[in-house]
Length: 637
Image 1 (tube, rainbow, N blue to C red):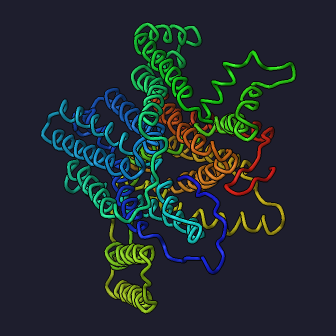
Image 2: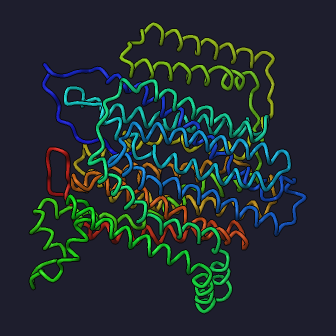
Image 3: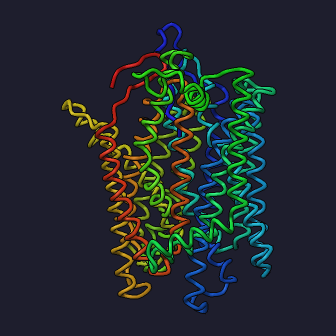
């Protein structure tokens, strides 16, 4: 989520403590959209493995065929995630330059709904034994959802910011905190509930219900159409269309990279593990020969994109990253002996505008290693689920207390919290008496459950599902982020020794490496002891480590990228941040064939890659020198 812009505090006379009227509709849309996305993602890996073995019981499938199915499922899962974070590069341009945020969010929401519908059809086709149909609709659905997410993801945060003025701008941090809560709220309940629906009612309902939630999200957003402040797209018209086509052409070569990572990773990995450099070069030559047409198309599209960018500059010059880069390159002959690369742009566009590209490049260089972090983080919905399948999934719990928690306390408190949140952002005060009554009812019912447990209760077994374990991440996130602030950041700040952003990120990347050391050790134990002998609760250790790492890397990284990018380049740097997630997921898809050696080897490989990336990041961070750019003030850093 993008960091909100800095807004000066209004005078008391002008201060407005009410949320803008469109905010409830945006929050409702986000809650439903996040539930739908995380719900379908949570069961995607499980479904794909089943699809690739023809939905046969895994213990009846030959080991080699099952391993191939798991590799393909890992690749499809992470290629999908790569697309989810790639298409925002185009969606942001479509919204900002051509159509406007409202129209893009609404219409791509319908594409999103169609994607879920295609997944539900895939689930139905698979249940009927039509594997070809299931594969087709699965691929179509994932593509549509990736496109839909690409339109929504870069627009929602900016659309929130558009609703505020100087009078109520002090509420912006609160609304982003609400968004943060809503995302994790939806993720937790989706991660817990959708796998159960998959088990009870099958894949068509498990994919279909998130689609219904996405349709609800689109409807809620449409209801607010007359409440929103709509900032017109700039420049719009022919120039806006030119910007959109240019960005699409420049993005095409990345689709080529994703395709090769999905289809041709096995020869590379096999060559690297068995044949050395010569075999790798031979594999590269075979890929180049087979995909020369794709490569040529990528080069042509990129060249056309640069040509259209030049045409656009001739019609109406701007000071974007690509424009300044191209201008400095074309006028490189005008540089003097003491001039740097950007000197022509500095003379033509001014000092402030020319500060942008080098600042962006400095940030990109430092952040280049963060892609490896995303390669690790996003595996909690794929390879970590695979590990959980081989672990003991039975818990022994007190029956009356568990029933109170599962069917009473958790649903009731979540429902009340959601109602309270919606009313709050709708500027409707919730009576304190209502809150006290809910709390009293929960406490009283809890005491009753405890009494009943002591007088007739028994211990019962509950069986967790492998895909449900990922609910630990959003649950831990809601606890870890406040704890980091209370017990680490604030005490260090009070002592005059604040933990700098790049230091936080360095620590987070090393923690991410240790999380994969933990899963590798757990996996080695599973392979030694046999399936079901190591309890799934051991995964709490790596989940805690990767969640703390997320707080240190992801949250801090967004804040750092936003503040270090000049005002005119903030959208650019956010695009590169999302692109880092894309490359991380491509890396997982590319290395997925390492699972043929063993899942333990696969985990150790990523632990090593992350440790190396963390070391390089620490080195790059030590040399980083930048400036802090805010909306109304700048300060040397």
